[in-house]
Length: 453
Image 1 (spheres, rainbow, N blue to C red):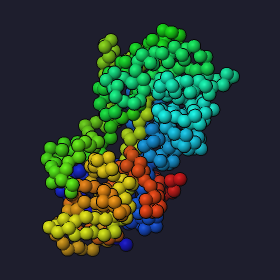
Image 2: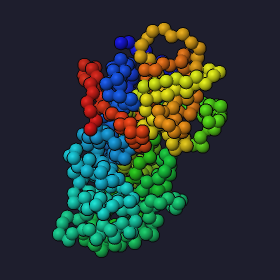
Image 3: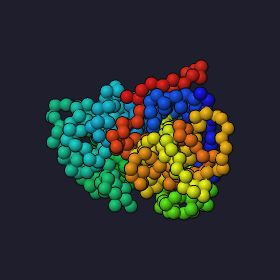
Image 4: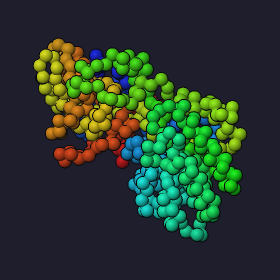
């Protein structure tokens, strides 16, 4: 069997590919065979990419001699292979449910490797976190009360962070305003079962400048905590580090020229993830660390001088390039005038953002099942799933092809590890959950796969 890679044309949002992802696509015969064996859609997880992403952030922090704790935000993907890669890279795990916690522990995570930042922790979740001495991020005074009721009197102190709701973010349901943080500090100081480790915050959006403003507010609370006899050692900035999916120039050009005619709905979505942003996660972190505080110190200066650890829980940015998703084409329906709809074996629950009234603005790659010559005129189509729902659409954008694809060809979306591949997956129509395989490359250049259990 031979195959041929065909770029999708007309949108110019081709994905940035890591060398490993490019190798998998180049070995398209193997990918076609894997889909034939394991079904469609097929998710390929690339654990080495997570390791590389951890190292890129660590280099920035080490270069500035900043003590740090990087926790992988495991909610971003259900892959145990990626969680194992994070632990192997020396990162911790951020868990938001008792089930994520149990998976991390099964893979060998210790209490010191785990932080729990989710706001709606159950009693059972608290119990299991306390049992192993994991770091708990406390979202509210009510949660602090819940934890205090579950702490024994004869054990090592329970480490906690207090989650700040920074000024200007009062509409968020997460965290506490500074006055409530202060009240919790007094309670923690009066209860010797707690160990106060520091202040946590997490903001929506991707501006390092906003994090720098929130950091200064956290600094004041850390200093107040020290003044009442506590010994905080950490400021935790959450996640939200950016990912570059497509080239910045292509992204900016596309935003400038896009119109309602580019979408089969006749509507441009109101917002998009910044798929072609100007910075990598590492560059973003360097800018944040160099941001000046009102004291004249930069953030990295402050952290060093006050012997504070900078903690963070990146999710999407740590799985940058760490997964690709392949869908087999089942049928192409002609809509007339050179337009059509391509149906794939799989649904939009498995790789898209249309369910969030947005789009996954990264072009898929067409892998033909053979390289025989095909006649035909250029063709444009949107991509639909196999369910009976009219809104089961992987891409509302009109995508261009040099000829009409055929049943059995593959459409492959790159970089689907960050919430794309499994956030909404289900067994609608009783279709089984898509298979997941981990892919690695040997020193000799050979690709190998193993189940992502």
